[in-house]
Image 1 (cartoon, rainbow, N blue to C red):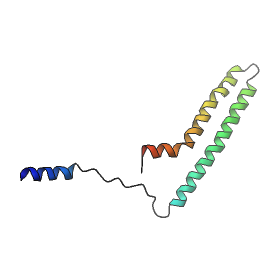
Image 2 (cartoon, rainbow, N blue to C red):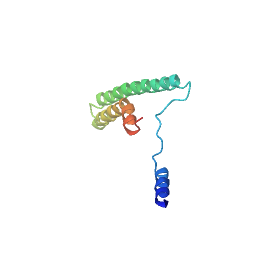
Image 3 (spheres, rainbow, N blue to C red):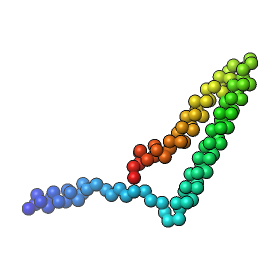
Amino acid sequence: MTLDVLTGAADLILAAPPTPAPAAPPGLDTVGNMFIGWLKWILVVCGVGGLLACGIMMTVGRRNRSAFAADGAAGIPWVLGGLTLGAVAAVIVGAVLPG
């Protein structure tokens, strides 16, 4: 009898906590989507600007400023990495926090 009580209590204590799916507060669905859309637009604009800046640095540094050109070339992977991370951000968050 005591063993049944103890195992029943252990089942209650060791039960998995509830994991409800994420839900937006009422009325914030459209605001949240609009804000994320704005951030994606800013990401694209900054990515284009970053690639243009890298290209300008490489062009200007072509003659007698090889370090400036190298800095421009070294910036390209960083810009592309940032754009890639921004593009797959939702997938990464969905993989880490399934819901």
